[in-house]
Length: 311
Image 1 (tube, helix red, strand yellow):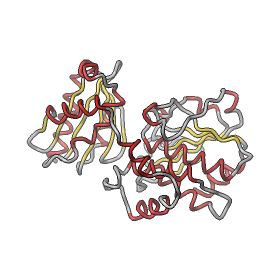
Image 2 (cartoon, rainbow, N blue to C red):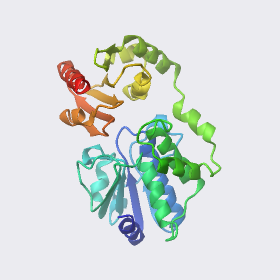
Image 3 (spheres, rainbow, N blue to C red):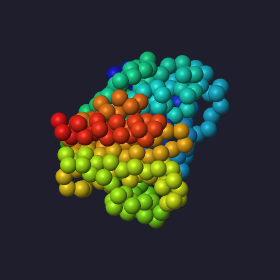
Image 4 (cartoon, helix red, strand yellow):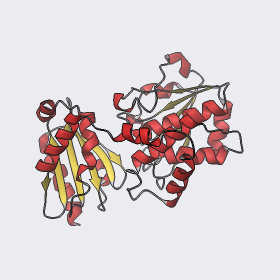
């Protein structure tokens, strides 16, 4: 599949790379890393990274603004996005061909070419693997690409703590840190939190509810977020806050937005992406997301989480 993707890339003069809505470092890292590799490798091609910018990730890279006409006869590549509904910038369908590169379960097999590897720690890891495959076939990597890919790997592995981290992950990270980007500056930007978010974290640690079987939940209403002057995307940064609590097996954050309640599921063992699928979502076995539309539905999600922890 890597060979087919590389050959298709060589056929197009314009390449447009997308990622998912509400991006994380891996979304930016895989998208931006691929763009920088292709720009370094094919300087005569027009290569763009598109989507709605996320201010909290602006330190990683600036996205491109392009008119609809640019998609005509273009190759479109979507990174780190499991289903079409989550692709940021719905103009992706205006291109000539579509490639999917992802590490989530392949529930929505969209695209003309699909490279899905659920054993990869991150889509960024896959982009580096793509470079390694093609480095004898014309692919080049630069410091910008290395920084983005490394940041994506660090973000999706929780600084190499999550079970998705493999020997290959460490090998790739070891190669990437040979590039001269400033790792300390990157870590600081990725993990520094605004004081108001830290105060909300304090509330979460005092107020989360834990059940006898190791399930736990946190409810963050719009009124509460307003009280702390925190927006939902900032609150989502705190989902891993409960991971160090003794006895916890799986937990769920409910973050109320204007039109829905975002469900953020995390686990130390029980498989929780089946719960996410039940509620308009999906994701990895130990990290998933969904959406519900009332606090009554929230109770149903909690009941399901308690049941899988019992099992």
